[in-house]
Image 1 (tube, one colour):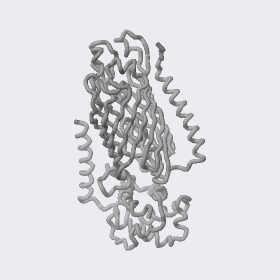
Image 2: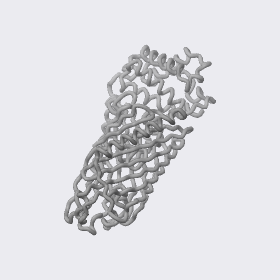
Image 3: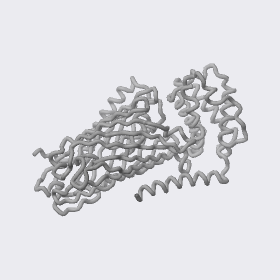
Image 4: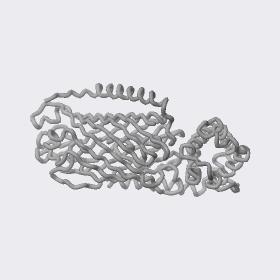
Length: 320
Length: 142
């Protein structure tokens, strides 16, 4: 068994190095690419599965700054550290004519060596998955339709393929190594909506079977059907130029009874985060959040209860 | 469930604050500082537009004093001031110009620069943009 020691500081520095490399790359390209024609911040950030959105929730906005005549895009890298776990997600999206978004993300969940102690193992494995996303704006305009309550509405899907299914997810009782989430997202910006500040509200309904977004596979001993889950985001822009935004998110998850084969309760609860986004220009954005990834088991000892796991979320992205 | 109702509650507070604003607060026109302040914002916006290579060609042959007068009158009327906009409709005024979103947004950015130049409070600037934003559908691709 290959042992991977996870040291969060090291992950952070490699994140930084990667970010700087992406920065050099994007700066190199920017000579050839004009800035996209959409307004600052209207491409959103990139959520943890690679779709334009907040930190954990996909929004109806199309990635990047391309207008109906332009192609835009974003590359992102995100790191989340919670007790016993480290989650890294990186990838890219292309926004076609402010209408269609195609995305790819690779996620890697690292476990520290206490998590599998219930199986008699002293190892620090990682579980990886690939996520291919597509999103289509079907109606509305989140920014300009200020004379109606009509939001921008998009539908999307995320096809996920777990690359390390046979070891941990299967042992815990997950049914499939791959699965597809379907969602509809509604996003609206209220200019001057709260005490003169611009407010963004988003609601997303997702049909899913995923355990921990698919990192622990799809379906389980307790349920193998699609469940409708609610996800919401609210944020306020603090300054005139819409450079600083603070907000919070909430994301329900299905509970498929994972862990039953081991006599462990892995009750899956909701994700939450509170974030600060810094969007100095149309090239770069940084999101820092305090994120709660719901209950994750500290150990797989029989009878052990999982507890909520919160920690630091950090995401950087480059757009055009 | 609890979270859903919290979000709904947030929406209610948002709309409630807008109703409250409608009650007896002075018009946005007065809050902005009336006609002289709006004239200054429009003047400075046009200065930014003239220096903006993305869109200044649209204005190369325009009658700038007349354009400024129409813009001031339109903003004055839209913000609750004592004016009546008598110019062309937005769709008629932009017919055949083939303006795209990027060019419309460039003008928005020039207006934002002017609002900043004139230290218009963030909240008033956002409310002005909220009044102007729906015009996009009558200006783009005409």
